[in-house]
Length: 165
Image (cartoon, rainbow, N blue to C red):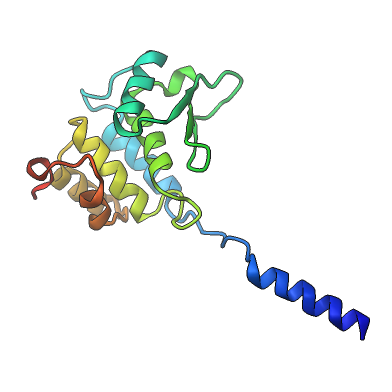
């Protein structure tokens, strides 16, 4: 009887505080290949200093923290901590915008590189003149990269004029 009580209590605790689901990051590599092939060589993709990266990040997320990425091989971002980390090689417009997008899309609700994330990334790229929305969508379609149009137009810094197809 006592054991059943503990199981019921444990079950109750688990139901009231369920773990967040593990979301499959189904298109990470596809997005990285897309960025390398279509975006990294764009003339507006500039190498930036750390203060320039911080200014760019705060343009879209005013409370973001930007770290220099010493001792890291990869750029990184955290939605929960509102933080991006940028090793020297990653301090370029496209990569900084990619990391900013991670701080704007809740990865507890949406896959890290899912269609919602790509939609926000496209809005940021458009704002920085690294392709128009129609160009980015067409390139994504050719690469079979999923994006959510609603997230492109939902992004708060998106202007009506630049959002038109």
